[in-house]
Image (cartoon, rainbow, N blue to C red; front, side, top):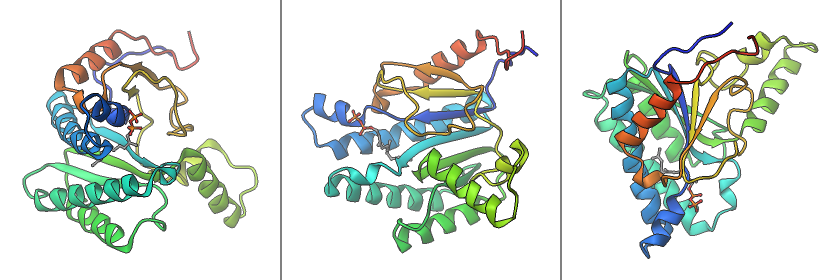
Length: 230
Ligand code: FPP
């Protein structure tokens, strides 16, 4: 089977380079994350404009807790503010918010805000924005295997595993974008990216613009996807 549809249905993004962006400007790392949150908004708008159906952002990994406490707290504050903003603008924004990851280590306040926005936007018919938050792909697979074991399934099929993922209804990403010149997956969507096209750019995430997004779409439209066939 060979195919290449011009617009990817699902794009997954590893937003990298916030710290380096801040350093270049002699600013604290958190200034980079704040600018990164603005880039998220630009990309959501661009995705809506070009007809992308699903966007998954790697916002905080299971490994990110190891960062200095001040940075972790700053990122959590930024997430709270972002969730508040999405709650306030839910009426006029036609996107649905999903959050993927282990909820428990997140503060009760953030968990409550997540619940509020996901419920307020559940009926939206436009773009789906999936925030990977305290997300790790190995943790997701371990959680899936635990569910399968609890269901007494010792020889799962691919469909069984898919059913136990954090977002079983989402199609696999067609395109994965990683910014800042790094070229690795960093424990992100290992199962889901089996046939995903990868796009790497040197642009630092806070600088990522609609034009950069369009460049990724253009590159994707030139790829031929074979899914292991010829
Ligand atoms: C990686 O850059 C980025 C992160 C670990 C955090 C991503 C968070 C945001 C873009 C802001 C908040 C997001 C939302 C959805 C509100 P890095 O800090 O590792 O950069 P570096 O490699 O240059 O140090």
